[in-house]
Amino acid sequence: CHLIYKAIYQLCLKQDMRYLVAIAEKRTYRYFKTYLPFMPLGDFLPFGDGVTAGVVLLDWRKFELFAMERKPKFFKWMTNANAPHLVHAPSGLPLHVSC
Image (cartoon, rainbow, N blue to C red):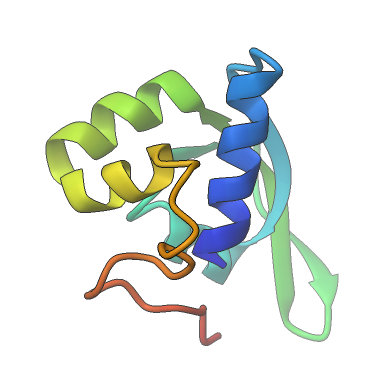
């Protein structure tokens, strides 16, 4: 999952897009906010079968400040677009979300 956010980050940089708005399942949101400072834009609502989801916002500039300070290896990996050998997130980061 980190790889898709890296691709989205790189695309947003190219397109000069500061914000990302997404719909996130609550458990996934809680996991990702440890790496990406998502902010909920409202309440998480039940969608059936135990799924609770809501609209979240990510400010890439806040991410950069957050990651430079708290997750420098992750930030270096996210910002390095020209490193084909860096396919996976840095060691110590899980490669997928288990819900």
